[in-house]
Amino acid sequence: MKPNLGTLDRLARIALGVALIYLAVSDPTISPWAWLGVPLLLTGLLRFCALYSVFHFSTCPTEETTP
Image (cartoon, rainbow, N blue to C red):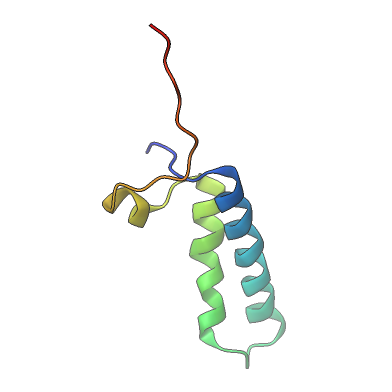
């Protein structure tokens, strides 16, 4: 798996994932939708999003190679 998440994208996913998981655990009446924080947290930690790879999208900075 080649990383396809940039730093800002990763931090946003991790923060939102943790917040949603906290809501799901602290108040179960919120909604089962709060458990969507789990895939957000995992994609942020792994630096890989399967949907990004399907659509050939990446927020990683491009690496320039010198000849």
